[in-house]
Length: 290
Image (tube, rainbow, N blue to C red; front, side, top):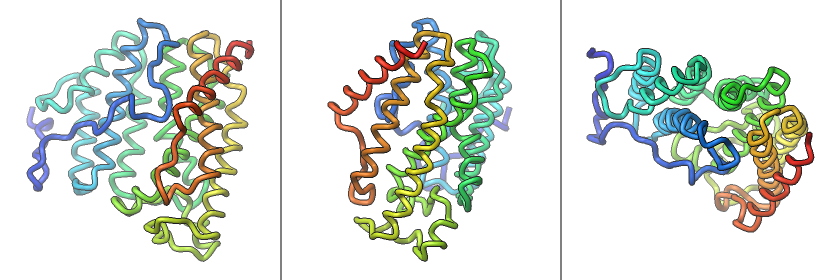
């Protein structure tokens, strides 16, 4: 089946591969709070999304080749067969979804967002960014809810939390994204209104105008976290409830950290003590949420 045979990039690099694993993520992935029997399925979904994300973000790949790789991933996911080794995560997720009887809709929606990334289509308004997050982030939370048998009431708060996490990650990487990919997820219209060019992101410090744009973004993130606050209380499964509370706590802490530090100077992240405190606070909140 020739459609699965993707030629390597002209640079001579090997087939695509994920650039990092779950240990490098801001937020827990398949932590021990989740049931042992479900963790392999969560990891199958994660590895698929991680590979697709890294393909879309690879600065050494041309947009056309990125799109070809993403299309091959989707075909392998749907058909459960492929000839290229790098497509193994798609085959693993295909097998996982078959066992759990969860449709492939969530994974395929994520690919829609990564195709947009591959073409480097900017988000012009906040509504545009929210639409992007509906495909890039919300399907992850919706998959976890489906996997744990949760109801529709949790979907709205879950979408809000996932969007907040996505934007926090974008703010952490805002300089790197611009320097390496010419990509900026902060609404372009906010730069225009402030008479600041996104090119300002190449600098090693934010001026007052750019800092105001970053803080405006964090204001909207905090509103999303407020909408996400009911999530733990709506989740029936104890483990997922605790994990959602922990992630909510970590997100709030990271938002505060991004207000205090400049992401242009260095990548802002929580310290180990800060993560421990936020995790403990999340577990306590999760235990008392129902």
